[in-house]
Length: 459
Image (cartoon, rainbow, N blue to C red):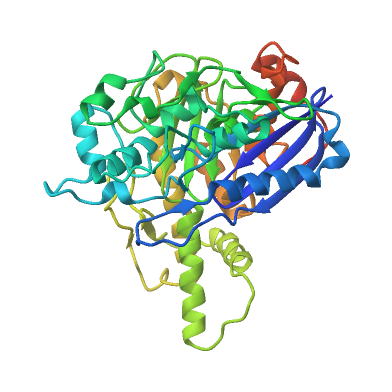
């Protein structure tokens, strides 16, 4: 019996087909997410929703040899973003992604849209959150014509796979678009209406393992879950005692908590089993490391030395060599893209000395800076959860392909490092979710026991 998991990322889309009995990966198909639309404004970040559906369908075609045995399909998707749907169930807007900056534009009052909505509602909201986007469009009088509902891109893909016309939203994604209350897991419609928005645009909430419908060939499709929750599910062998460090375009740390907990520096996100993930999310990560690679590339280009090779392999090697030297480390603040709490913060480089002002130490300083920000989040966890941590699971290409980053992470958290068996953690987590939602397993603990046990190395 096979299960499929689909992960709709910002830059790539992945489909994985797994054997539900032991988690063996039968097939992996992935493609670049080329649905990005040209930005009309410097702050605009949008993608064409129907192009994403086409890419998913092309991946399904690529897996046709195994598709007949697939019983159910789980979906995970990039969080926070939204698009608008017509009554016929079709997209009438692009997907406005989590990277969109319109929420930081200023009103006549001098406050940003995100700040004003936060003050009006009492919720901590940021640019890129779906309901901040909805607030901006409402204030501008620019809601898409024909729109009756908003939803996430994962919900939209689920709708198209099973020809459903009305979107619904899992609490893991609902919490990411804003104005969502915990622990009772409901949209705060009163505050939304008081802020001048129409609550009728909100999709109906579904909880845990809700089925969206069946495909034309009889596969059950589940409503999408957040990629953070899916990645955690796909990366760990047990919820308890694991610190997950993910470094991709951005970066974050995630720890499971069975009980509700609040911290001003952590996001408390609903998990599919009724528990929570405590998450410290940074806008830095691979994006900051990419900025450094671009800097080196520009320097070489300026001096006429540039070729077509990627610099990452050389940067990683130089970092490993630099870790063997006893040289004072550059202190790099990698908040080049701000933080969620302080969008206008900038990066910094401190502690420059004659013996450390070189490419090797600059690279190491960047790696330290990325991890230091994440470590600051872990220090905000409840003491009892910190004491229970026994494993450091790492995911995302930003750390998976960088041995120096791995070495620094293990030292920083003083925990043994473990890689998820399947590197497509979010897609694999979506498949585990589908195995539970379709009734193959009674709960996630049982699903993990079987689907994370394969001895094969799928990395």
